[in-house]
Length: 273
Ligand code: DGL
Image 1 (tube, rainbow, N blue to C red):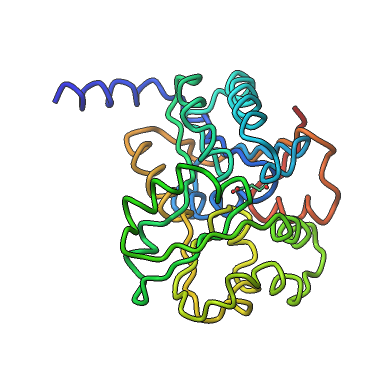
Image 2 (cartoon, protein in one colour):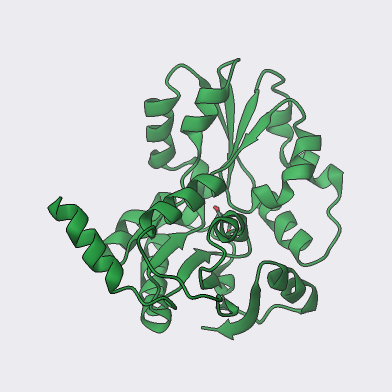
């Protein structure tokens, strides 16, 4: 009861224009922003791509653990979000704890959807397709032990797929053979009936991955995260009309095909940090 009153009191202090801030190394986090926007159409949105440090998947744990909390601290100061979403499995599996310790607002992470994958698998063979950094994390070992103890969990990290997803959203054509080659080590396992898209870039290549891994159902965290955000903000006020969504790049500004893609996600104001 006391807790309910506190939550309600806190909700009153959230300004309707306070945005939800999404953070990724590149455009992958749009696969988390899209279902959130569908569920909360009046939510003001700020999307941040740490393009100056892209890609995260080939970086060391130390680099990510130092960079991500510091950057989020600056972003929270600038945009005053009501909630931050680390829409990146690599950053979440390495730095979620550090970010939560550094920020005073709620922080939602994106971690490999191993639990729902194990719940769906008939063959008890699931794939975890992420970045090289993500698939080697103890966080993933822990999820596999807790939720997929009776499954064979195949892990595969691919930097190439991240590059292909960025290229697709920048308006380039992605060759089916390139995607097939990137997932070849998983494709040889015909008994793998579920694959976890454990990098937020990969749902952006869902169709291409369906052709490359036709026997595996795909699972990702996007809609679950959207529901979690809706739950955490359920008593909070929203503007009648959402303001223009903001896309922030830490590196070079996006060129026109990518800018048009961002506009389709409601992100029409481009800023630099
Ligand atoms: N989108 C990110 C993830 O979910 C990372 C991609 C990268 O920068 O390597 O892991």
